[in-house]
Image (tube, rainbow, N blue to C red; front, side, top):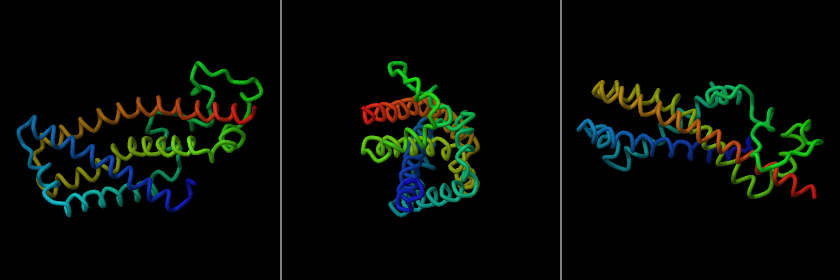
Length: 199
């Protein structure tokens, strides 16, 4: 599924829309706080501008994903994870779930995940995990690059620029915390389904 073209396009669109919504909310709230809502009004002045903004974000995310993040381990490092979660899956299992002794040495992807990957529940959780992960990463990489270029072209006030960067950093940290919690839920549900399917 990860290599499926339709799935990848769907992922990039979802991530782009989520990031654009975050941007709009930040521009609006900061604009109200510093009494300068011009950036928000500029982007949301018409559907063609909103569409252009979303398409631009989507294309930059796609480019960054292909060029900089073709190795998934780079993504996990940006989320402060030293290894891919599947490589050390036992540490992500919720405390209420007992890991069978014979399962501890199994390769999670090939021997556990692969058994249940086609179940609708696991597919849905997996898609959400990917969107949360990529949104967190591209919010602080692709999105910041776009913002810097956009602010320079539009000669946006420097204070707005700094406030936006601080807001992005804060949301990035919050999303990392949320992602790690969701990762535990994701891997725990995979293992739970595996146990149920093995009965």
